[in-house]
Length: 306
Image (cartoon, rainbow, N blue to C red; front, side, top):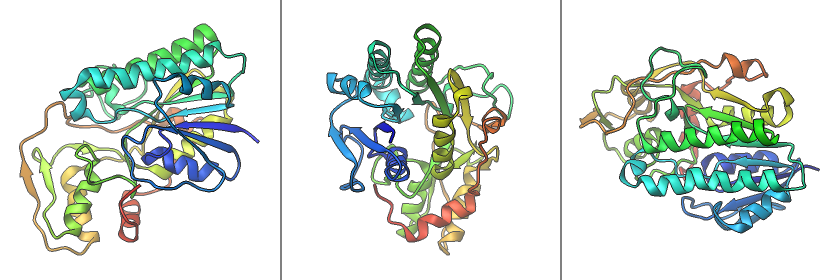
């Protein structure tokens, strides 16, 4: 049975990975509890309450066959307020894990790094493929890109079997709407559930490629098992674009609410348009299955918490 370490395993993506993998692998979660309200994990899963910057994280890397690195400071807006905090978590934390992988006598089967579409900045063309210029507009995007570069370098220089995933806008019912940096979908849903109008920052014409966490998990499973994925970077999205106004209206309709949309001043560092070219991911078998309307419907009978 494979031994798998999931950093940030109590977070949105990490928790779904834990639930998916715990029946077929020996799963260890490394999490500092900084951004989760999840109180339990499936039986047999080991939780280590520690930080990716610490010695314990390096020890755990050497004890596992696969590392899935989801732990990060994930907010564009917080990174604009505190770039050093962002750097420390997203760059030095990742480098700490990679160093353990490099220096360990244990040969990892795979080191999967979660990056972000924020590495691209404002698109020069759409849809965005992996060769698109990378000009991040926020410290968050810059830190995620730096982590990618370290991963690919460690693969080329030291043979660490890294795979970098660039998710576009991930959503799931486990997004936490009480977090001020939470995703737009959970924020809209929380307001509509409370009979409050969703608030759009900007004119609502911004477009995003919203991808269900279930499709993200499918891509991780493919990356774990595919030798050809090593040393590569993959977009993970749907290739379908949705305006923020369309998103808000969809949520209003799904909940059967009689509400208008409110508009507020645009947020700094926000990207105007984004959509993914997932041709490269398709080459290793990736195929998004969840349509946005269906994915939003999952929120109806699910409490929005982790």
